[in-house]
Amino acid sequence: MRKKVKKAVSGLLAGAVCLSAVYSGHAVYAEGNEFITSPTSDQTGVIITGITDAAVHDGTVTIPDELNGTPVKSLGDKNVNHSFLNGKDVETLTLGKNVTGMTLYALYDTPGLKKIELAEGSPFTTDGDGVALLAGGGSTLIKLCPEAVDDYTVPNSVKSIWNMDHMNLDSLDLVISDPDAKRRLWERLEREVSHV
Image (cartoon, rainbow, N blue to C red):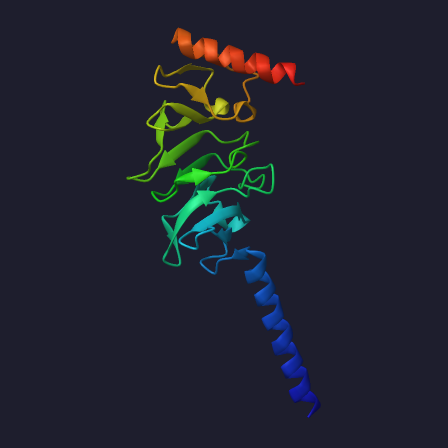
């Protein structure tokens, strides 16, 4: 009788742990236990909010198109101000074709990142052999990997830089040839510096 009670209690505790993980919105998918995820608000996809050591293969993290048949739609956790890469030593990041968004800090503080690759059909684009991630048909610079280049010429198509914190421009010569883009960047920098 005592063994049955212990088994019942163990089963209830295990169920409670599973339910709390589901209701908190975060779960580690069984698919290799590589990604920490939560559902999208409309329940039609998955957000990768973090990775585990198992996701890094020879310095590369590949975000799949789907996890367990559900599209991976976004990266990052809106409640934190650090990268979903969790400080892991990642040199190459490959984004699946279904990733259409990311939080402001999804790629923040990733000093070892040298290259971003895209699956065919991705809504993003890259520039300079994957050293820059662009969105909006190339009009927004999302991420620059300064470890990979000594200087970088911002394409004339770029009208905005998404988050200056991502850029880590300390040792990089940044060339902006479009005078309007240069003016907008300087105006933004002046606004940000005046708030410090």
